Length: 454
Ligand SMILES: Cc1ncc(COP(=O)(O)O)c(C=O)c1O
Image (tube, rainbow, N blue to C red; front, side, top):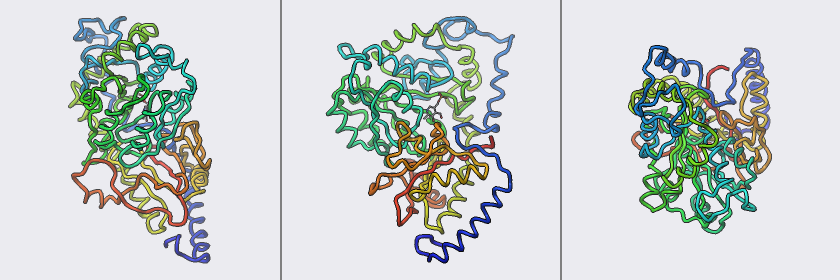
């Protein structure tokens, strides 16, 4: 029954039917939490053997001939830098391996630029009045949290299926030298699962910002997190920047949080020698050296980049059926009703769905009452501010988010039925299209991660 075309009486009957179905669901006493980007237990179990890689009988000396049990080597052990160099597609000499959180490294990096100019002659950002940061929306709330904390005005930039609106970005950064950077999750973005097109990456690499100290925060958190056999390919931003004579523009980040153990994995960043010189000069004051035993443990467990990819196949085996359940259910339940649009990404952690305007908060509330916790509304907007203030927020922005597109604006991403995705086999670029939106109203978005029980 298509809700957009049926009569009031038909709608009333449908409502009564759904009400009963909902009460039945409630009666199941579910306790599910999809509000956080947490791998399920089965995924955590995949890396358990890594804990046995080091023990009291292990050799603790790495390639640098340093005892990994002791202080030393600020930038991390060589073999781990090489591993992350391969993951990020950069020379390992430009890599610094940190602690267990890439978000922590991002915070420290912004903090560094707040207090020390990244380019000689520029002001530290704390002295820049009206400093601004570009925030593709919907995006990762914790990114916005960092720049919000440091007092940036955050300018939302709409996402399309190719990535953020580059026309807007090029215009803004070329005109305003108080715009100091942009947050990017270039592959399987949080929360839409969008991978930036080659053209988008090239346009980023060729930006001509008015601010000499403008930087791209390139958070490649989901760089090896494919869930289909047609994974997306992301163009190498660093190479593109070098080619464009702009090698100082990007700062790359990633971690093994969604590979081994979130909060107990290894994080890394990479940037040009000019940038790394400034960052290391700052990092030396805040830490003597990071956890080299954990670096060693990870490197010995994976062996090399191929080992990481092989491991990710196991994650895929766990996650793909969950994605399928979510997508098949959405298709079965919402397509006939003619409501909702959703993404069908080739990887990452999220499926983003639009529901009719004014209903996302209610969806979250009803889910909660039925034992399913979802991320609160507005979380994927800077300061939690949905432009229409129609969404709630739980502060994570990861597993479920809602948003509402500005009136009259085209919703930037659409989804395909699995069959259509299969038909599109071979084109691994971004999302495929399928129109299933609300006819009468604009939409809000809800993002599900096919997650495990809490
Ligand atoms: C885009 C993105 N970046 C960073 C993180 C956090 O990474 P880490 O655990 O390395 O701090 C997450 C976690 O969900 C994320 O979605």
